[in-house]
Length: 222
Picture 1 (tube, rainbow, N blue to C red):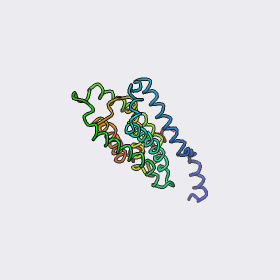
Picture 2: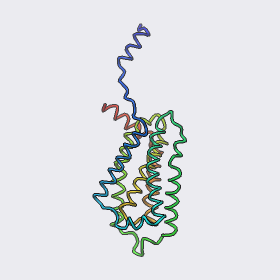
Picture 3: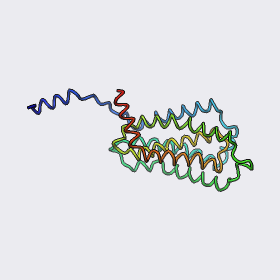
Picture 4: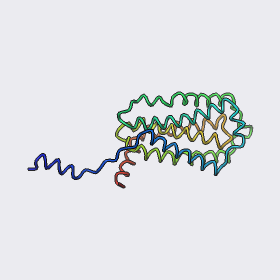
């Protein structure tokens, strides 16, 4: 019969070294640097919208754009913080103020500029370019967030995935405001809020499975 000391030695011999996670703020900063790189590449490829400086003089547009960017930054920080079991869930409230301002501005613009699209409706070409920007901005950020937060599978997968999805949606909305002129009325509601709800819903429903799958593949690869 195996003794206790022999059992401990056998278990210790089979243990793999555990790498300590980087601090959450450091990982959030790395993700935000990736977001900056993605926006820069999109700017080089698509160019900044020609009326950006003019629109930034409008308080509603400037406030909405600043709020969406700040929402993305704070939601990313909150996602990395609450992925640790010793951090309070109150960090979920960190992006709440800019998120409220961002969504309020979207609702205000939808009500006051509902006919801004024009009598011809939404241009299919512009809609296709908006969709391409949405995919190009959100896909790498979503994948990076999924990989960097994969160890949250056993902690708070639903809340972490939802907060990460809000961060991706907010950064994507900022990209749409930078590169596309169709940013009032229905298009804002379709792309910005729709993306946030879609990403947040997917993260909330499948967060545990997504993080668990990525974590298992990462362990196998290492």
